[in-house]
Image 1 (cartoon, rainbow, N blue to C red):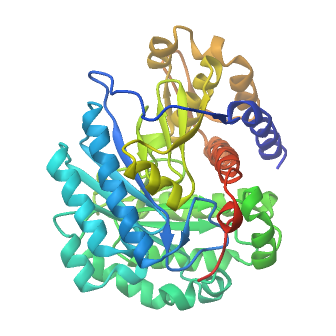
Image 2 (image 1 turned 30 degrees about the vertical axis):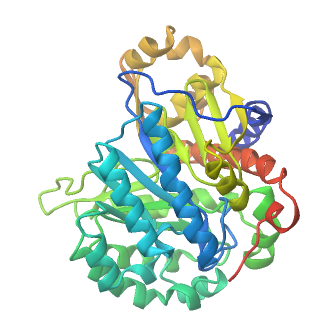
Amino acid sequence: MLAERMISNVIKLISKGQMAMSPTTETHLPEAKPGQKYMLYLHVPFCQNLCPYCSYNRYPLCEDSGARYYESLRKEMLMLKDLGYDFETMTFGGGTPTVMFDEFCETVDVARANFSIKEVSTETNPNHLDTPYLEKMKGRVDRLSVGVQSFDDDLLKQMDRYDAYGSGEQNLERLREASTYYDNLSVDMIFNFPAQSDQSLLEDIQKLIDSDCGQLTYHSLHSSKATERKMRETFGKVDFNREYHLYQLLDSALADGDDAAFKRRTVWTYNRMDEQGNDTYELILDDPGVAFDEYPALGCGAISHLGDKLYVNNFSVNGYCQAIERGHMSLIGQTSITAGNSMKVRLMRSLYDLHLDKKAFKEEFGVSVERGLAVELAFLRMNKAFEIDDENELTLTPIGRYLASVIYRQYCISLNSLREQARGTLEGEESELSFGS
């Protein structure tokens, strides 16, 4: 649709300036601000299998480098403690954080011993949802976010996930088993695969309803420069004109009607409801960029948001570990966020959360959202994005939810430009994403 293409092109232009990385000689992140609430994000770049759509920093697992990496990650956490940071919430992303399970558990234990941790969230894959893993995570991890992507075996084979992580039916049974251990069980899915039919998407949704998961997130399939060629070879060309239709289909099937099983919590996230229509799940967001205003991000390839800057860590596993072993962090670059772009990010985050508080916006930036983002609001109003648009708030229509999802999708793609700049500083095989086992 025209509005989708316009949003995509505008954010691409904005990102060229905002996401330009400058080298840095800083050896540590800035000290914590008194009273500021932070989430701790830890990046684990290792995977059993490297998926063709993933643009995050990740490498095939090597046991020796993995053990060294986790030890460095724990040392970097203690550097944050020395800088005055404390956390109630921490989340692991990747990669697959649980791919070296004992090292993962030790890292959680060190964090709980040194910070005021109340909630731990981690990404994982379906093959780690067996009893020994689940029993050892119980009490350590409060929320599992399981990368299922689809239950369609043909799509799983196309993604190169069928042999690595199991069939759709196996994964459905694993989710049911995990739900007996975890009320806070979340499932990550992807829509808009070129080979995904309406029927395949609806069958996935029915299996999610049957899975007993408390929360699910449907991400739109998108590529970066680093993954574009591999994705085209694997899936064919992604049709963004079709994305609107599929988004409407899944959004309606999950959350519309008197017998809806889920409630919308963001444009991509849905929480299960009980028979009385009450939300049965306490939302915890994996993405620190949405959940918290500022956050330090640790690990190889992690990107922190602190103050008006994004700080980029070394994307080399060896380079990251060497920096930590020398007693400092592995920062290689940074980029500043202008006041105008900060307002755009606030709009993006608020619309992702389905609601913008106009008074809170003015308190934060000193100007009204109408004055600070007049062009953006005019475009959204022209495309009938708002259900409520008064002096207090903005909420979204169905088309508005889709446009908000496009804005967030393009923001995620724009962050990939930082990753690609950082990866470009490496040499040899580490400078390019690899795929497969």
